[in-house]
Image: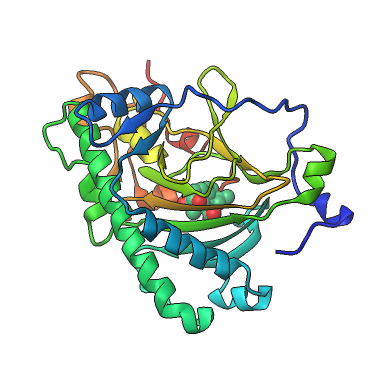
Amino acid sequence: MVLLSKATTEQYSYIKNYMPTAFSSTIPIVDLSKPDAKTLIVKACEEFGFFKVINHGVPIEAISQLESEAFKFFSMPLNEKEKAGPPKPFGYGSKKIGHNGDVGWVEYLLLNTNQEHNFSFYGKNAEKFRCLLNSYMSSVRKMACEILELMAEGLKIQQKNVFSKLLMDKQSDSVFRVNHYPACPELAVNGQNLIGFGEHTDPQIISLLRSNNTSGLQIFLRDGNWISVPPDHKSFFINVGDSLQVMTNGRFRSVRHRVLANGFKSRLSMIYFGGPPLSEKIAPLPSLMKGKESLYKEFTWFEYKNSTYGSRLADNRLGHFERIVA
Ligand code: GA4
């Protein structure tokens, strides 16, 4: 990524009138090895749509090896990285996010978890990168399914795999993203808040994020405040996505989040977005309705995804699908 000059910083977005928040200690922590995990997960999804997971079972070596390969990838010259193709829909992207004018202080790789990617752009390390990615993606998908099954149990849904089967489906439309936010030294001097990745909710069912120890991630609370999430390279952070909000008829909330650039250190995050097959109907689960009306019109993931990709990052995408309930 090219270093910012005065002229280029003006093309990015800043958060104005923003007082930096202290790191929050209120973020729920779920120990996956403890029997109360399912209860804590449900509570966290209702209150925050977000929680941190420890004792997740993904070996730290697998994580750090992939992280170091990803750093190597981002340190290659731009023309080499661009050999991964534009992120339309999958490939290398820089600054531009989506296709509707959003920009951020970020470069990234966007991959489809079900597609064999050709990493030939990655030179002699291609095979290593591919293997590390594949094994990381399958461990993270396994964890996502475990969490979704605990959620179903916590919600007292009889069919334990009601959510996880969507990620296990061969047609599951899941995405993997590696984001690199280079340090932006100017910020250290002028103290401004440059947006790395603008505020948004994730459209899928669930997202599992792991980053290095650089701060930047913030979540939006129900009380209208943004809080900073203390980084923790050994843990995973879980987001409820829009589709899970619909399937629980609004009981779980998809969490609005954003990333601010850092003036001193670069941030690297890897996110697995667990999505359903394109043909899947996304609707509240009957067992969660108990006589209540659905808050949403029925739609398929294909329809939601299509409308999502025509939206701006910060849009409330579920707005189009809400029903007026008397
Ligand atoms: C947000 C979550 C995932 O990163 C993503 C993003 C996608 C993209 O980068 O192409 C979107 C964004 C995300 C939601 C609105 C649209 C689409 C950018 C954008 C402006 C891969 C996804 O699935 O939706």
